[in-house]
Length: 492
Image (tube, rainbow, N blue to C red; front, side, top):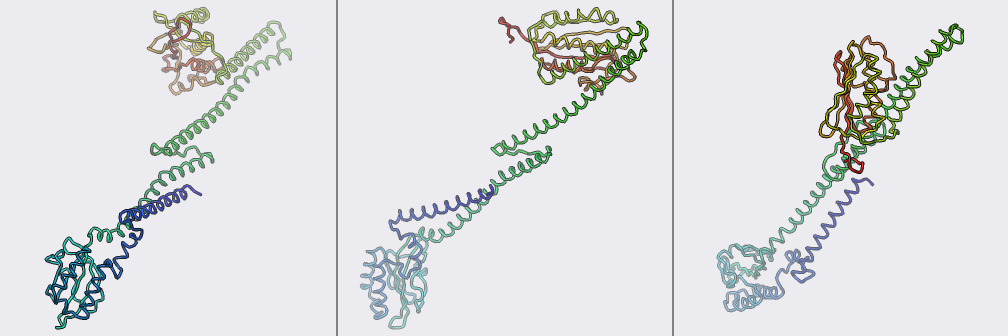
């Protein structure tokens, strides 16, 4: 059974129960007021019965009717009429007698100036002898009899009992009220059913459509959440799930593309030294290296290529472990400027031999950070090595500068080399990417140095980026969060 049908049955059941309770309440209230179980049905039936008067009133009316039929002249006697009026007053009723348009007698309680005009006219057939009338603000139930006096004048006898106009109004309006109430209940039931089904069924249909689209592989069908209720929260959760699933699929596709690119780059970087090694080994085997000097040159070249291959495999293995978050970090509190000064000191001799000036610019106050010494040293070496590869000026210079903000220390490694084109900047931290200037010779290296540096800096909770202008050198920045070393060796 669908949710729509269940809601329809629920609303219909509530409507039926409401109507039944209303009818039962009206019945019980009527019984409580009148004290008569039959009063509820009599409320409507009495008006149409042939005997709307009480038994005593009906008896007196029949006696007067009999006199009017047998000896109407007696009705001219005021004494007789007063006697019957007294009997009627005892039961809170009254009488009215007329001859033609002349009023013969009227009970004192019924003396109204317009009562005669309100009473129905002559009807010698006496087809309708019981009914109700309104005289101003007063409401009466009556029984009447039209007859003929001995002188052929028309006469009428009325026995009247005053009723509550409110009861008559209720009698007339109650069916209308019940009808309006039922119409309002039906309309309200339909309106609520429509509103609730629109607020529930429509979002559920969108969720179903989105689920079907996801099942078919389409992750672009957006679910728009409306409202703050449970359905809206469900739609938002489903939309977040769809977005995360879409990102996961896109990331998986990106990983697949990276894997293919990685395999292609590894194949390319391995093929060149292996081909060189193979050529030199074949030269030795075929006797091309026929002198000790030439044989030594061949062996030296083979050794260089094998060393390059070994370094490439090591860097590839390190990058893979960093990318899979499987490299443990040994963090410790150090003063960043002392650490960098020691690292640069180790590089000064080799860089001086290459004609490269290495300079460090540090703040005067200590700068405590939490780092893994070996891995951060690897970052510094990779960044400086990257600057050395692309040096194209006679006066070669590399500057390592440290600045600080409230929370972070920023390290800049700047060279005055060829620089990097703007369209290449977003890709220089990708594995095996070499941002080569036009007509620039292929540099030595694995193409993993900056990718490894990025992984290590992100493992420290920092950020790394590059800024460069063509022919103006390049600056690579990375950040480290500053810490305050506590007395027990922890950080705050």
